[in-house]
Length: 151
Image 1 (cartoon, rainbow, N blue to C red):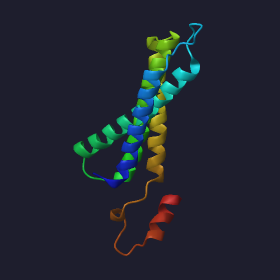
Image 2: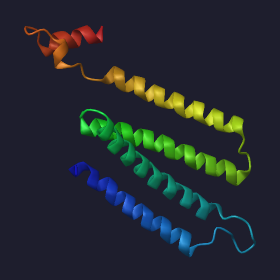
Image 3: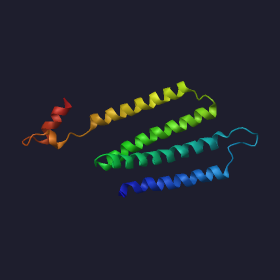
Image 4: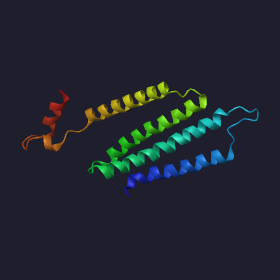
């Protein structure tokens, strides 16, 4: 197992423990019968964090299983970003259900916004990507290729 995955696994264990304690020891209702925003909000935030790490690690391992090896940390960053967007989608659906406004148009709009965010970050990472050494000719140094990509 990669060494840089250990903090994420520990974060997931702490998050799951805190989520279990909040769900098992607190009622989402106040004594007057209303829903407690503090408890529901903290539960949703912990659920967002936990789902982000779970989806991110699943996407990271799926990428390693289905494609050739690449920069592990870069793939982990991309997988965690996509995991966060997927977890945000799930949490937004839960909030829509809680408020009672879940409709097909709201779901389509949410998918469109999250897909456009992913496209933005994906195109941004492609622009910032370091050029390969294979694109240089044998007599060309790094500063010559950097000048070509800047202009």
